[in-house]
Image (cartoon, rainbow, N blue to C red; front, side, top):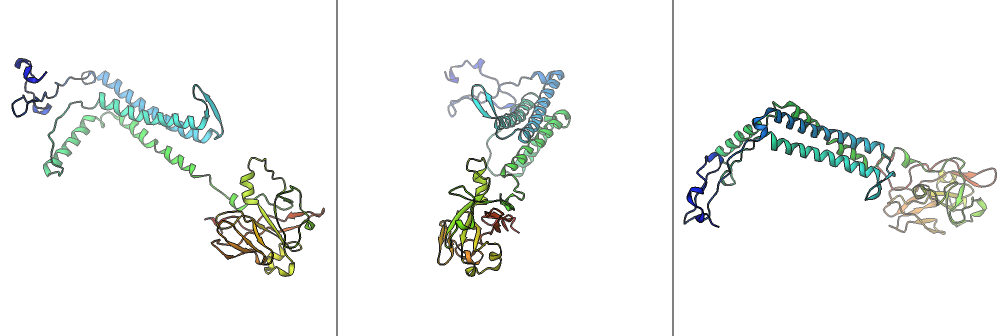
Length: 352
């Protein structure tokens, strides 16, 4: 049904331009502009008690947001990563993920709900119609924008309703702490654990293949043997983490062929113990050339001279392989006389 079929007496009358003008249909514009409906006051506009109730509701939502943010931080600190809970109908899920998701979601929801309830019940609800204008902003438009901003700030009653203002500022100020706490997930602080392995004085050298302690007689000149610390088993929970630092490479060279003085002092009857982990990107070294005493990393061809302190003679590795000082105990087994002389694996920012 077009506006031309509506009796003239039922068409909306011209309204105040501040609330949108009404244009009747004509030949050039057959579709009439009905204008904006008349403004109807809300209960909060005429009843201060209702306005106070809305104010308390908004403040309660902001306060709940603050409590949820505190709950987020507390959950992150106190709930173990491996703890699980049963949630129907989802099933068993991570307790930490569930707590973080619920508290963070509640904090965000309450901030949004509080802002929406504030706008719908306490801020001005007069609808304004404005004509389209060019993209550029002439001085009078900028002045109008500033006037509108000041008017909106006045109508929001932010200065008069201190309870809403203070709780909103509290919620917005506290919520970013969630992101600060999450920075901890960049990784636990390494401390000194990158500088130390399971090797210590008195630890026996155990053959990786036979799982038996090694004697000097088990290694012949020109041989390459891989070893691990005594007590480290493959079924242990942290086996992969520990073996990645403690994996050992044993070679036996004629003592007269060992060029580096300290390497000779840290060896036993020509048996040298070096880290198996390449100092380039941490690949395991597994290739050995008997005649030249060179060890080759298969990943990027870094080459180390084991007769000369495992120094780098080719490839991208940045420094020599760390050496483990070894000896023989009273029972004739090879044992460590301490830990590696420096951190194993690729160079890192704490390297001193």
